[in-house]
Picture 1 (tube, rainbow, N blue to C red):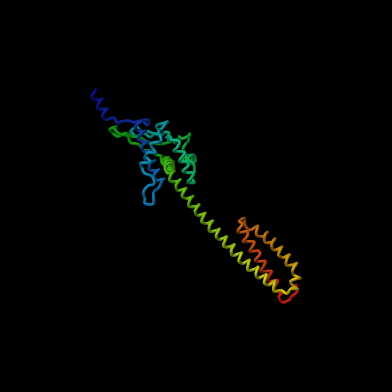
Picture 2: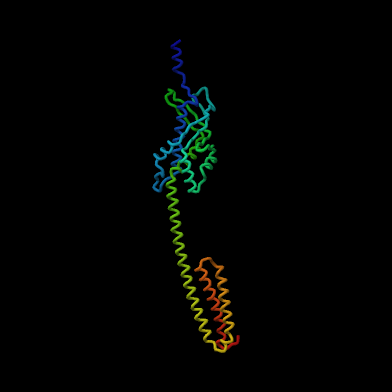
Length: 290
């Protein structure tokens, strides 16, 4: 009888339950490994092809995350096989600073918050704890010394974990890039403002020169008109000068809020009216009546 019992035991396949600690540990190791790869993928690579994040940094960050599988139950089993199909609730607990820094990095990058990211990945959030259903299988080797595991629906979880950790680890790089971008934008703005100011001053100088020329022209024509005609025209000329001043101030005030641009517009208006008045006054050089 003893021999038979030993003989039977020798050929009995080792069994393993879904709740076995070694099976859970194997499944969790797969999840950690895949999140590490997803984090590296999310971080991307430098121009020379090297990864933005060193593997050692990713692993160090992953050690701060507590992972466990709760509410484990068997979803399917085959009496002719040692493989068990399991379902449970994967729980990932992050240090608060990891979530805070990841949120900050994503905000700077113009991306959605960690909460929104979790909702899109069907992850339930409770403070800094995130959970999702996970399907996995466990199977011992024939000698029962090792346990193999497979995770069936981890893709979304891996990507989500990778996005969180990549954002956390790249916060400094994102802040630096954002600062440099702001500095470059400020430099560009200053250059544009300087160029615009120089342009305004050039326009003003041109407007002054053209205005002076128009004044010289109208004065020359006025002096060339015979004294008798000038006497008849004097009150009309004075009224025109006053109206010109009012009209051009009104016109220029609506063109801009910049003092230099307003003055340029006013001078341009007066120059235009001076030239028109010069054409009008030229007729009196031939002693024409007005």
